Image 1: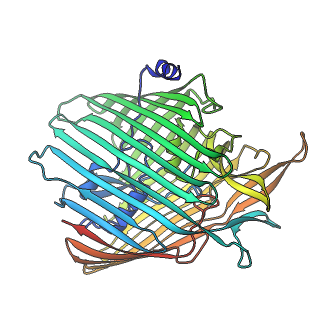
Image 2: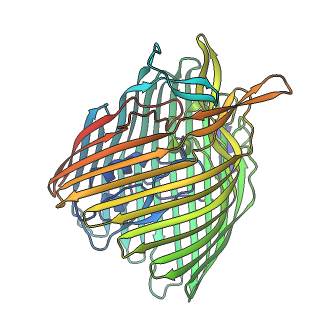
Image 3: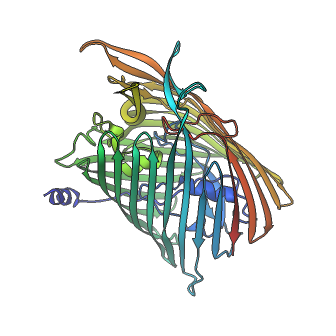
Length: 591
C-alpha cells in the first residue's frame, strides 16, 4: 500500500535536475592537471543527485569564471571557499587518456583518483570511466563541554584528561562512468555512478551508506536564426544507510530520489520568454517512513537594453506530502518567490548587478550528507525532524564583478536573506554514567542573515594568489528547545591561497582556510513554564596547509601536501576533529 500511495502522489508534472558543479583552486591550464585541483574536486563531490564528474573536468580542458553559492547550510562553519565555474577552454586540448593520482602518508589520509577516457572513433561521442577515494583512518580528539564565564565551550580535552583521543575511520568512495553525445542541434549527457561512505567511531559505532546514481540530460544548442530552445533532465538515486548504534542497536534507512526538469524558451531580437519547471520527489522506508515532493514553476522574461541585462521572473512552489510523514517535511513554505535580476555593464571589464530572490527546497537525506557526511539517521535524536523544507522567503544581493588587465579578477557582493525554515547544527544533551553526554544533532529554525563577501584571483606569471572573505551577521528567531544547544554559522569565514611556480617545473603553495567561533544557546527547562538559556560556543580555527609538486614531464609528477600545520581543533562536523597535522606523499600520472 505504501508504494501505491507514493505513485499516486507523484504522477504529475515534474522537474529539477541539476548537473554537477565542482570546486577547484589555482589550476594552471598549460600544465598537467594539478594534484591540488583533483583533490579538491573529489572532496567536494558528495552529490545529492548529480553527474558524478562533469564531462569538461574529465577532459582536462578548463577555464574558470567566478560564481558564488548561497546555500544556507554548508556544514559546521557555513564555509564556502571561492567557487569556480568550469567551462571548456577553446585554446587548450589535453589528449590524456588515462589519469591516475594516488597518495598516502601520516596521518593516514589515502587518496586515489582514476579516470580513463577511451579513444573512440566518433568525435561526437565522448565517454569517461572514473573511480575516486578519500579517507582518514586514525585518531580524533576527544571533544568535551567546559563551563566557563562565557558559557559552555565545546573543545578538545586538556592534557590531564584520562582519554584525550579515540580511533576511528571515515572513508568515502565513488565510481562510475559518464558520457556525452553531440550533434548539430543539441547534446545528450548520461551518468551512472556509485557513491559510498563507511564510518566507524566511538560516538555512533558504525555506518555504511551506499547509493546508486543515474542521470540523463538533453539540451538544444543555440543556432543562428533559431528562436526556440529547450533543456530536459532526469536523475534518480537509490540510497541505503545501515547504522549500528551502541544505544539504539541496528538501524536502516532506504531512500528513493527522483528529480526531473524541463526548460523552454523562445527569443526574438533582444527579448526572451522562458519557463522552467522543476519537480523533486523523496521517499523513505525503514527507520523513517516518509514521502514528499516539491513542484516549482518559474516563468521568466529577459531582455537586453543597451548595457542593461534585465531578467524579470517569479517562482511558484507547492509541497505534496504523503500520508505517513513521521513529522518530516512539515514546514509550510511560501507559495510565491521573487526571481528578478538587473545587470549593468559599467565598463568592458566591470559588471554591476542587483538580485531579488528566494525559494524552497527539500532537505533530503542525501542533500544533508552532501553538506556534512557525518549526518546520520540519529541526528534527529528521535525528537526533531531530520528531513524538512528550507524556505528562503526573500533575499536581496548587490554586487560587482570585474577584472584588471585580465590578471586580477574580483567579485564583491553583499545583501541579506530571510529564512523561514532552514537546518542548523546542534548538540543534544544526554545522560551517561560519567555525567552529561553530548551528541551531534540537526535542528530547523528561523533566522536572518546579512553578509558581505569578497573574492579575488591574481594570476601573475609565476604567482597565483586567490581567496575569499565573508562576514555575516545572523539573527536567530528560534529559541533552543530543552536540552539542545543550537549554533549559528560562523560570522567570519575565509580561504586564502598563494602558489609559486619555478620554470613550470616546481610548484609550491600555501593555503589557509579559517572560520571564527560559532555562537549558540543551550536551552534548559526549569519547569513547564520557565526556560533558561546558556551561551554556547564552538571555537574557531585556521587550517594552514602547504603543497609541493615537481613536474618530471608532461606525463608524471610527484607531490607532497600537509594540512592542519597549526595543530588546531577543527570541528567541521560538531564533536569530530581529526588529531594533529598530516602529510601526504603521492604521484600523478597522465598517459
